[in-house]
Picture 1 (cartoon, rainbow, N blue to C red):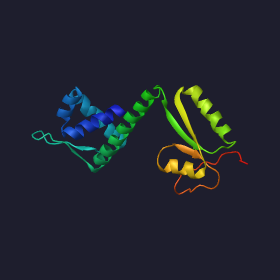
Picture 2 (cartoon, rainbow, N blue to C red):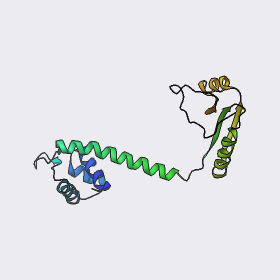
Picture 3 (tube, rainbow, N blue to C red):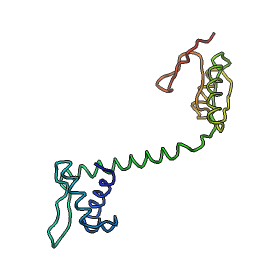
Picture 4 (cartoon, rainbow, N blue to C red):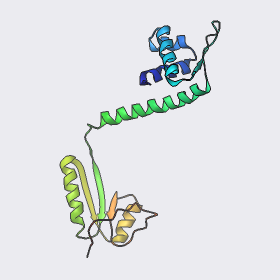
Length: 168
């Protein structure tokens, strides 16, 4: 099944007419009909109920309604993927706010920040020093992005990563 043919199918479903869909897609009616017929053969199911010569209105079968829903989802996902890939070359910039106590674990943070800074020089780090109460208050107020604290954090309230080193 090709993405292009899914777009053709959605145009027919939207227009409720093969002729009008062909016009909107700038295709000939026989070309569009052939593409849809081939898709029906590929799937082994009739997707459209074609109208009589007088009405020419097209309605979707039950399978056609399922395909319409999935085709919309597929094409949305394709568009999202294309956008993500197109934006992957964009420069990563921004500010990262960190709250932490005076701890030897800050070395890990400094190394990680240094590595990221080499890859993304547009990232700027802002570090606030304080005890666990200060760091939690800053997190709760949204003034920092993450914090390093001693002790056991509330896992229901915060997402937690355990550092690979112990502090003294």
